[in-house]
Length: 127
Image 1 (tube, rainbow, N blue to C red):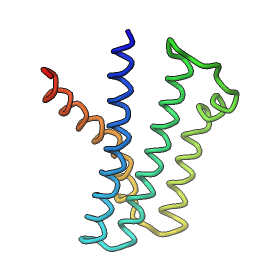
Image 2: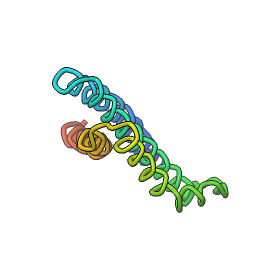
Image 3: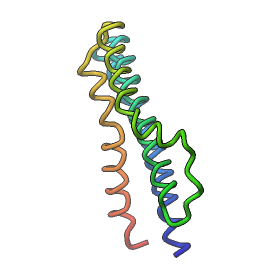
């Protein structure tokens, strides 16, 4: 059972690292092809998705087999996280006038990181 926990922790660490690298690569591509405002909107979307992924990770840790006692603020975040993320998206697009496509593209960073982790696991399955 301990080996499974180590595999899970390593995979989670690679996913977080992958999200950071993908966010940097996407922002650099946006900077080169669309300009700094597009790159900033992409980074803001990526940061929001990173934060959401982190919150989900905390929720899973709070209900898992080795759960630590959940904090009350965690339950508040469960209820308010989409309101917070939606408000952040509104500010990015309407207040700052940044590209909605760039911000939404940044929200896909965790999906891409999990996809890359899946490929990594498939390649290294025999080792």
